[in-house]
Image (cartoon, rainbow, N blue to C red; front, side, top):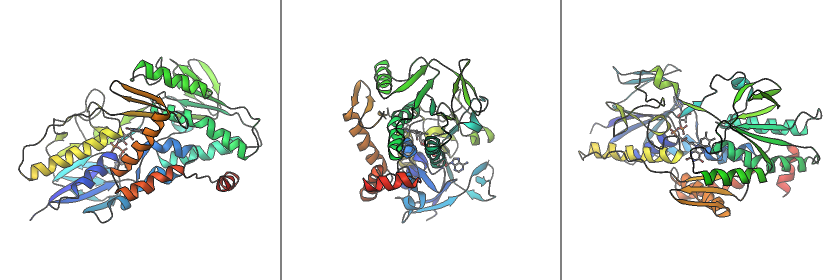
Length: 397
Ligand SMILES: Cc1cc2nc3c(=O)[nH]c(=O)nc-3n(C[C@H](O)[C@H](O)[C@H](O)COP(=O)(O)OP(=O)(O)OC[C@H]3O[C@@H](n4cnc5c(N)ncnc54)[C@H](O)[C@@H]3O)c2cc1C
């Protein structure tokens, strides 16, 4: 039997899910190509930045694919050769396909604001959050007493999660270093008049109140104009800070514009009702112009849907049209509190926090058997500090 060659590019939420689900079917010859050796679990990156163990937000791809019918390769896809049905990588390798699945995720967008790309910190990768964590330490314990003004830009879930966790983390580090008397300022800047502008107003109100209680100062309806080594310019006023964290923008992966794909007005890839952008080229996850694109749950759903449809196609069955699935949003804001939104259902506080812990466990299980997913989930409780003082004290707790 000749197997259908499926090439999946991108080992994130959508690509890894499609690969794992397809790997159960012997009729496919599956190659997963990714530019990183790990699967990044973005929802807990904020936790890693504020003292958590990096393994909580990263799973080696070879551990996800071991003993599966998946050929795993690493490389950065740069070119699509439609004629010869091949993907070419920056490293000079080329991979052929019968069907191609693209799931490359998004990149950070700095909107050409001066200084941001060079000077701000990010929360988009393990490397980003490790760098931020090291900086937070350095600032706090430096004998030169630099400013302790932390400015987070972006009032979406990522900015809010980080702003919620930061006060307690900084307090802990100061406690460990016996420097509790230093005064810390945490600002959250958002250009829309309220946080979570795309969510219901009552959720924005509750989250804003919670952040203010935690001591975070909110700058709403304010635009960032530029960053220098010492300041951030916001609405023509300077905020002195050496720690600006940019969470305010993403853009579609440049691979698509560079390779002549048809893009929608929001720059995501236009697809048909089967998530097919061109004959036998499928685009899923954050890259596709679907109603809830931009969320992990959507990427998982897309991967599952496409794997099922490809199996149906190979069996000669009627294809299913793509149906978007409304996601549940759960936004943790500081230890023991989260805002939950699902249709008309809302809850705020400890129940939300518990639901979020459960959602993470279920999300790990989307990729791993329960025993492994459980061990992965337990890493939530691990702390990881390169600072010997913090590490020693935390080990003693
Ligand atoms: C900090 C943060 C927190 C988030 N929290 C949540 C949350 O709590 N809940 C939620 O639902 N969503 C959350 N999201 C959004 C969610 O993570 C994304 O929607 C999801 O990751 C999209 O999946 P994807 O497969 O499309 O892309 P990704 O998961 O980003 O995967 C893309 C993969 O492709 C690889 N890649 C990129 N370019 C190339 C290339 N040229 N060649 C080869 N490989 C390439 C990347 O390295 C990556 O492995 C969060 C996002 C961020 C940044």
